[in-house]
Amino acid sequence: MAVTHENLTIDWLGYATSRITDGESEVHRTSETSGDAPRERVVYVDPGRYGVLDAYDARDGDLVLVTHDDHYDPDGIERVAAPDAVVGVFEGIDAAEIDRDSRPVEELEYDVRRIGIGDSFEVDGIAVEAISAYNTADGHTREDGTPYHPEGEGVGYRLGIDGTTVFYPGDSDVVPEYEGLTADVFLAPIDDAYTMSPDATADLAERLGAELVVPVHYDTFEALEADEEAFAEDVRSRGLRVEVLDPDVATARP
Image (cartoon, rainbow, N blue to C red):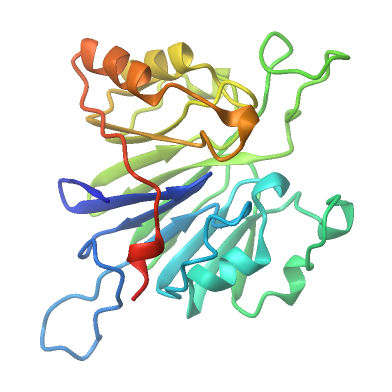
């Protein structure tokens, strides 16, 4: 299941994985030699983990972005990235410091670019801005009061594609860095375990001026359980469009 907005098609593939394209919703790569038709561009954000891509092997992504170490999954990246993909990885990710089996970023066989907070760049006409992502002291913290995601250890991404902007905050509470931020499409985390609460997410959607809100980052495992329909009702009551997507990717294989 996918949703369209203006020139973009957005899929949520489970957990934190989203697919954004200015082509068709069907997973494919349009031949660059097919007449004068422009080739679609495909972006993935935070692909993989927790088995969400076990039935998926598209390898069609032109640009793949990873926000922080919890969402770094080399196998997931390989399932979505085209051979000539640009893979943008937050500069603070170090596989040696991740408490699960992983592979170093340096072993990824792509055009890998390390991304720092505040960085902005362009890939194939797609504008990328990295925005600080973190939990605040009065937000989501461990029992000892330390944030799950301390400041400086991750980013969110704001994309510009064909004049349409898309914002995904990564694992973050609502932080001062969002002041004045706008986005046409908001990929909205609603788990309220490690990211902003559904109420805060809906408030942020209003502040962003979002024309489409897509809930993500919920129900993958017990700690992420959320009431997506209640969230959608709240967002709609504010006059915003929201689409709850089915994350089943088994039918999305090429």
